[in-house]
Length: 91
Image 1 (cartoon, rainbow, N blue to C red):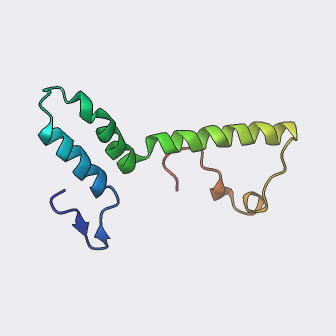
Image 2 (image 1 turned 135 degrees about the vertical axis):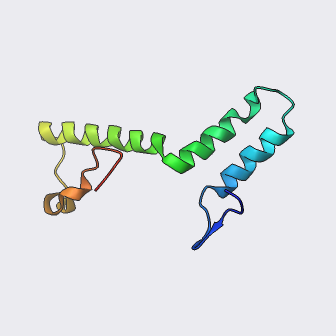
């Protein structure tokens, strides 16, 4: 990531990268323990692992409630099955 700019402007994670890089360069600790939260923020911005896991948990609870009859299905779910995001890779 040289400049942080692409064809459509600034990369969405570039600011996270800059903060992590600054911490990494200025840190005197060889393990850079202080930079771990910044690194985690950058990786989350790139890959959205935590966000995807949270969405999947919410959907699992919704599915349980639908099976028990405590919740009615939304109209768009009835019409389009793409609204069900079961895996991190969606079609």
